[in-house]
Every structure is written in structure tokens, then in C-alpha cells.
Image (cartoon, rainbow, N blue to C red; front, side):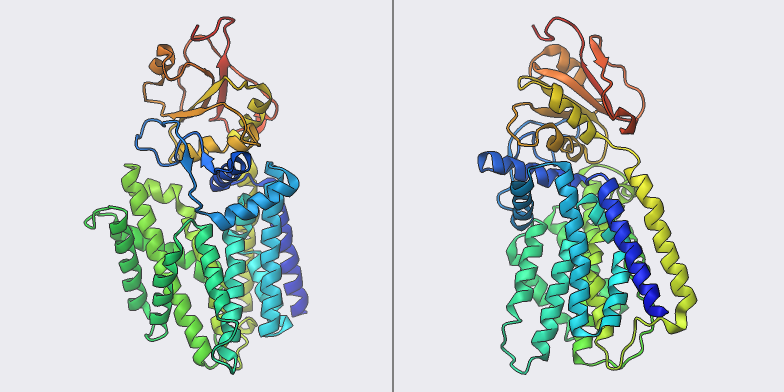
Length: 484
């Protein structure tokens, strides 16, 4: 009876992943990475040709080439291989995302079955299948599912290496390789392996209690802020850390159901995994807090606005799913996934997680934005016509690039897009016909109503009914050329 419950839960989780892949729009980061890849496939140089993501000005962009410099090499290689086989498109990325999500679940099951038993593997995989960050990653083509797959492989190899009678064995290099690939996925330098390995080594020598976790999180936050050039007297440092810990509690303790039966006697290997997992959790929490403080400072925005806009950053903690559960499953005579004494709590929490997934999916895929506008422009725009993107959002360049894949899937077009805020002097720039000589299309993403200059007309296009109401498309409507 219990096994049937877990099989049904896994089935529901797989359906959630499929629905998410079909219905959710791609994430902003997914569009940016796809643009890098298609440009490299076109001219062997992966660049963002409409300008870098973080502009020096808060009112508009400069159209200049921004190279990837081989950052994200591993991630871009996967996307490029997929595009080479099937050709670049939104659908192809959704299929790749689903393959990654289901591949992650299959990896968890097979490795856990090898280490423990079939029942524990089934239960752990079922819990992973309904974990909201992984479902969202499958729908938005984020990296969390593939990263968790790599973490599961690294954890498996570490256990095999420690259990091996031969202290120097072929299992040890594999976790380092997985760590290098993960760093490449995130666009980080490979030398980060050294401080990461050092932190993990330290964690095995000390007890990772609440005080140690807070201190390490604060230390990481301060180091990252110092590197980013943010004053260490910034008043948002402590609120950001507290908010990150709240997110950690929700995404880890509740989201991963880390409240099951923890019976079982700790041993050397379970202690290593537990302490290492807590160290990673502390470092990630401090890093997330530092990101929030940095964004608030760079964007000159209030801290709470940043928390709302970047609340999903806590999804990075999803890589702890396997190490934390393995740290308990490795205990002697452990049966932590039985939940026998907490059946009522288990049903309530799982029901809540399922409801979150089910209700969040329609909200996420109810409307589209620039990717639909890009699809229309793909059929209408000429190579000598440029686009003006008016947006007051927190990530305007990301949003502007989210129409690139559908507008120019082969990255061989000559059209350029420019970003401006609604309160900049974009109207005057259009009238001057200096930099904006070839602007023939305007895309609006600002709150409220803005008066459009004379001569511009609204464009109604296919699928405009599913586009967010804030997005509007205009084209030059006069017979004469705009800057003749």
C-alpha cells in the first residue's frame, strides 16, 4: 500500500514536469544563453550584439558587442549540440529542458538504488519529482535539474571513494570534474574549486551548529560584497541575510521535507555528508544575501523591491536535495524515508507542495511577452529596421533579449534593439534621427499609459491575446520614411 502511494506520487511529479515544459515560458536567463549560442553558431563568436546585460546607464543601453569569453562553456556546449541536431527554437529548448528534468529524476533513482535499496530510491525520487524548484527549472529551462544531477553523481562517487578499501581510487576525480562543470554552468572561474574544496575540508573538522552556519554565511556575504565593491556598512546586509535564511528554511526544511524520521546512528561517512551539506548551505545562503544587496545597490532600488523581484534566487539551494538526504540515509539502520510516525504531517505538506505546483503553473504560463512579439517581427522586420524597447523593469536587457531567439533564431540578421526607460528622452532621440535613424518598431513594457508620438500605430498580431497587457507593439505608420 505504501509503495503504491510513492509510485503514484512519482507519476504525479512526472506529469507536473511535462506540463511545466509544455506550458511555461522560457526564463530570461534561458533566452540570454540561447542568444550567446546562436550567435556563436553563426560566426564562431558567442556575443550579445545588442549590448551587455548590466548597462552603465540606468536610462538606456548602448548597442555594443558583449562576448561570453567562454564563460558558461559547458552549458552553452549542451545547448549548441541540441540546436545543431534540431535547429534553434523555443520548442527545442523546452524539449531539452524536459530531458534534463526527467534525466535528473532517473539519475537520482538509479544511484540511490545502487547505494541503498529500491524502496528508498523510489521515495527519494518521488519527493524530488514534486520539488517546486525542479518543476520550475524544467518549465523555464533553468540549470537546477542538471546541476542536481551532477551533484547526485558527485555524491555517489564520494560515497564509493570513501567506502573503497583502496584510499587512492578512480572515484575521487569525478566529483572534482562535476564541480568544474557546475562552475562552468554558472559562468564562474574554475579556480573557485580551491576555496570550495577548502570549505568542505574545514566542515569535516568542526561541528556545523547554528552559530557556525550563521558565521560562515555572514563571512561569505561580506567577502562577496567586498569583491563586488559594495560598502560593508550597507544597512541591507543583515536584513538580506535574515531573508536568505527564511528562504533557506522554506526551500530546504519544508520544500525538501527534511522533517522525517531521523533515527539511525551517525557514522563517519554520514557525518561527513551532513557537515559538508550544512557548509554548502551556509555558503549559498550568504552568497544569495550578497546578490540581493548588490542588486539593490547597482539598480538603486529599495531592498524589499529587490527581494520581490529576485525571490527565486533561493532556488540555488536545490542542489542540497541529494547531499542532505544522503547524509541521513547513510546512518546505520536508518529508514528516514518511512515517515511512519508523521503520516498526517507528510500528507498535509505533500498536498501543500502539490497545490503550490498546480496553482503556480497556470499563473506562470497564462501570458507571454516579448517572445511572441519576436515571432511576429521575424516575419515583418527588414534588415535595415531597428527596434526601440521601452521598459522600466528590474531586468530590462534580459527582457529585451527574450525576443531575440524568436526574432532571429539563426543570429544572422542585422537589426539592432535599443533599451530606454519610459522617463528618458527617447522621444527626443527619435525626433533627432541621430542614433535612432533606423528605428521602425517600438516595444513597450512600462507600467501605466505613455503617449506615443505622432506617426506611430499599434500593431495587432497573431497570439497578441496571450501577451501580457503591459507589452505593446508599434510601427511607423506614415508612407514617408521616418528620417528621410
